[in-house]
Each structure stands twice: as C-alpha cells, then as structure tokens.
Image (cartoon, rainbow, N blue to C red; front, side, top):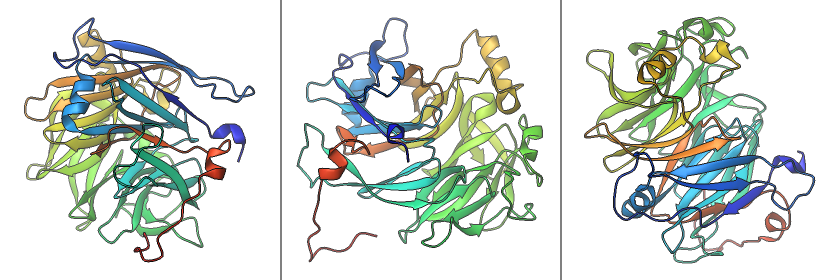
Length: 395
C-alpha cells in the first residue's frame, strides 16, 4: 500500500447559509475551491471546485442529516455537513477506487480497489472531536482482490453483502477467501472473472436481499457492452424472474415506501419499476449519468456523473446524450435532491475539476458534521480506543 494512496483534507467555511429560497436558479450558487495537497509535499494535488444551490444548507438543517458520496474516478469519499454557524462543511479522504458504501448502525463500509473497509464511529453520543460529531476510524478490512465491488448492504443478521460485478454474483466476505458466492442470475452459466452482465445494483427489502440490476442478460465475457442502450434488467432474487426489462444501464435499485426505485442511467431518468406491468416509470430527468441513491422523508438523494468523452465503449451512444442535446444542457457531477411527490429537483451540490464521476450516495440521519480518520500521519497510529469489557461485542 503506497502512502500517497490514502490522505484526507478537511474543508470548512465553504458557503453561506440560505434559510430562505430554493436552489437551482441561475445565480443561486455558492462556490469554494479545494486544493487536496494535504501536508505531504510529495503528493500531487488534485484541484476541484464545489458549488451548491442557495437552499442546500437549509435543506440539510431541516432534515437534521448529513450526506456522503464516493467517487471512484478520483478515489475520494466525501462527507457533507454543517458548521455550527450554518455554513457547509466538507471533509474528504482518499481511498483508491472507492465504489459501494453503506452505513449500518455505528459502522461505515466502503469498497476500494482490492479491499472492503469497515470504519467505526468512535465518538460516544453528544461528544465532539474538533467540532465533528462523528469520527469514523478504520477498524478492519477484508482483502477481496480486485472484484469490482459495487453496491453493498448489511442484512438483518449483520452479514455484509456486496455485488461482485467481476464474477456476476451476490457475495459476502470471507476470512479465508476473496469472497463467498451467495447467488447468481439464472442466465449466468458459470462464475468467471469476466463481467458478463455487469451486475451492479442491490435492493434490500425487510433486511434481506431482494432485487438486483444488470446492464444486460448476457453470458459471455464483457457481453453487456453490446446491450447498453436497452438491455438492462431487474431480477427478483427469490424467484429468479426478470421483473423489469428494456432499461438502459440501470443502477442503484432501492426499496422505499412500497416501491422499487432505481436509475435508468442511460437515459438520465430517476423513477421506479412497476412490478405489475414490468415497466420503468420515470419521475425526474437529471443532467448526468445517475448512480447512487438514498432517501430521507419525501426526498431522494441521487448522484450524477459527467459523461465520459474518452470511453465510448461504456457511455457512448446512449439516449442521455440525445436528451442533453435536446434540452441544451451539459452533463454535471454532484448530488441532486428530488422531491418524490412532485418530481422537482429542489436542491443540488455540484463538483467540478478533478472529480467528474460519482458512484454511491448515502444519508447520515441525525449526523450534523462527520469526518473520518485517514491512513497517513500520526492520527491513525495514535488514536486508541478501548472497549468496555461489559459491553456487547460489535458484529
């Protein structure tokens, strides 16, 4: 592990609060520059700018929550919260090719290039560390190898589940192997390191895995690339039935409020799968490639990525390009807040520069200002915690 693979930079006082007004209008943005050189003179800085709608800080305050997102392209995990004065607080750590992310109780799980990390919040309720009310410390990891781990979740029994995209299966971690396969689509004839269908998304229902998304119903090496425009599917894990077809590169299925929500990423649409008709029902169009989805109240938190211009094998020829041209829009990277009742995009947070692609988004309810311990310097070496011998041992 190279030292310059892991570093972190807190960024405070980014933006002014806006207790009134809604975001999304021209001139309603707040901007700040971030230079991620940390304290390491030999680390090449990655420069990026952030902006937010005028109402975004007020929305976080009303929800009583903070947000987090991963960007595998830049190898960053970001935490967005509020300073005590109401301004936005942004904290980031560098984790190579971080994709899937899930919060469970006091733990944060993040997949990386060849590991899955478990970070644990070490702050007792009501305690602060340098003004932060959550401090996620790396506690353990599983060495999986490069499985291209996408969505992750923890089931009702405390078992960590993840989408093993390289082998096209749902899997769990192992103390002796790279992974333990749990389920594969019925059309996949063999577990092989060939990314045959680009299985990517996992939806939990009642604490158990229920639905998964794939880019295509293909059974050959990299076969999904030939069906990106309309070959996407949703699979019911319990019945092995395909419950929705005709999608374009679907991602991030989530069960919420009696519906199966997901992204039809190749068209830029967020919506839900009608399980009676087998059709996708769009709710909102977003100017970017959608990945990452979470919910709080009547709002969906979605992640957007810019369209790749160099890799047409993955992103070229999609309807999203045509829709952006029709609406005279350029693609964006960041987070959009969508009102489920109206389909309106009420607020947004945008990232430009070195960060162009997001993968996962997550809401941290009841958290005001989170941070995480990195892998460089004295912090991870000197931050020592001791368990109460009488306390219940965490899973």
